[in-house]
Image 1 (cartoon, rainbow, N blue to C red):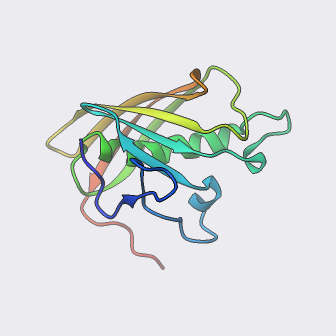
Image 2 (tube, rainbow, N blue to C red):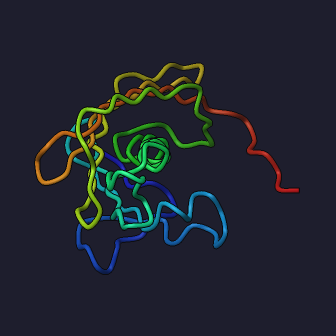
Length: 152
């Protein structure tokens, strides 16, 4: 279990950690507050707080909002679950929609670190739930890269 570098304990949620607010105006900022914590050997929980802004026309969490959160959960959850330090990019991410997510109820991604290779590939999987009901399952592969892209 590891606390990701640069993370601090969330003052509103003891035992949970955060990297703080995403840069204003960034795509990631639309997800809202995200907190995370280790959850045993090679496991972590990452939480978002869905609002009405995350809903589709049918009143459920929008699939794009869910997939964006899951992608971010691979990183925060992976680091808490023991993923090696470094800068990573997503190679693939598969999401299965099992139930309908709701606004106003925390959405928890239960992330498991399946394997990591010496070459920098990381394999993760998990489920997302609200109030104990599984709404989504996912798997993803990350790749450690030498340097992040420089902003333009």
